[in-house]
Length: 189
Image (tube, rainbow, N blue to C red; front, side, top):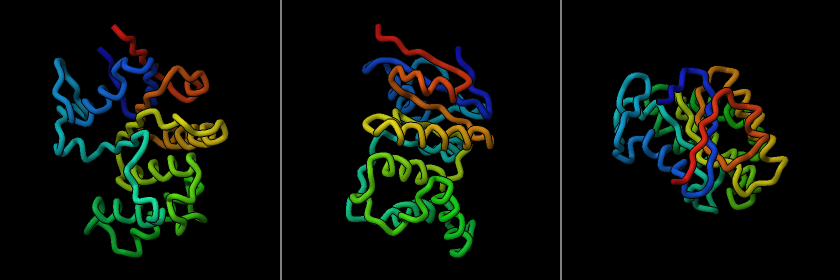
């Protein structure tokens, strides 16, 4: 039995095949499991109201490489906030989100021209414009350089300090232990 409380930063570590990604997908309601997963006291299932309060940052996203960063974020924001904000409010919110991730100056760049670490921050921005209560991240530091890992961890610390609940999977990475307040270790059977 494990419990995640609002404002927690949970790090899940374990080797390949230990079930980290399966767990994340179960929280998202994509898999039926034996047992119980509840978010905010409600069972999750794909498309349920509670899953609309969860944002997911995968290891990679199938982005059209010629697409501009701002277009990727705007498309997500329009889907999420349609009718909740005026166009100018939405644009301001998007630019503030990009600014907080150090991406505002690169908003009009094509995705293919961004570094791996910058692309990962685009994935995070795409999740944040959904205004989630829970942020799930599946190995967000795989394949990026040490400076980008540090930058992403700084962003995660700030988000968590501001009240964001985060569950992140990763391989055994000691530097990530510094930012989390709970640790789950998944072992292969």
